[in-house]
Length: 387
Image (cartoon, rainbow, N blue to C red; front, side):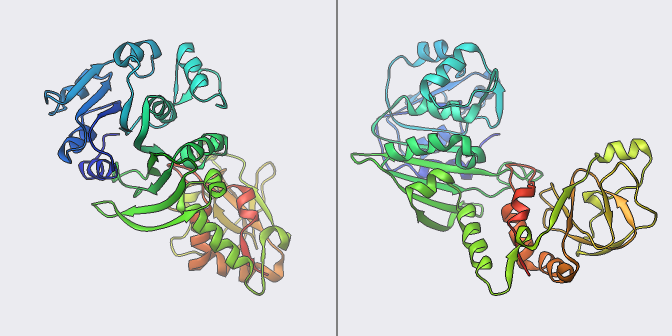
């Protein structure tokens, strides 16, 4: 994903050091390079890029302070041939998100850089690899500024990476970017991760949220090292505060303590359509929350919503906070929908709360995922509700 110019300026502006050599693995069309030169940061900017078409769009490639290598970052020998043993004062980047298939040599290099990595066949997390390669070439004092996907700051399997980073750095900032930063048609959860490596170790960690076209800091808080190892996203810690405050509210309990059951549907929408069976999917939730009525009797072999059930989406960023109450009848539900069964005495109060502002906010915050948000059964069972 190409870096928007305003974001490139925000990334470059987050670097406090100046002078020396700066490194970017995966220069792309040169947005970060241009922004760094514009603020007068580096004496020398070294970039590596594989895609010649993208690199040709970099208007600053002929700048006397720029050194651009055409090489594959994911090939350790090629990267070493390009960079040798050089060390850099600053490293930055907007590396590719997601997981990609990599060579045996790349897997070995990843294991060398991060011995605790959880390796799954020939696949590797690409932004993590770019980040680790950059960190391995950083001098001290030094700084990094990277745009990373949510797993870097949230995934439990990367907790040891976060712990190592915090123990090594002097200061860390991790700010969530607006979800429509890269494409107005697709919501993507991403973060600006900045780490400064000075004379002291054991980072002070600040988490925040950036908003608006200039990516201004809207809010922030300092968290303990232990909390940052667990999660480095502000929204998670805000959500924990919110949940704990609700749990302490008189008369509140959790779905689990209430004795509720949460059941996921058993077929996809396409499977139901192929069978010609009427069904309830995420697209069928009423926009304003409310009751739904079905005809017919329960069908054997399917997970079915029945009168008295509360329905909530399992997945779907735009609909994750909706809810429906089954007033009468029954209908099979797709695998993208949960039916929530609560004791009859609590149905009305639970549904009213789930459809209210706090209930919607809780589910939006509890949902996981960088792109399509989803709720797990385990998360829903911890939801505070009026008893």
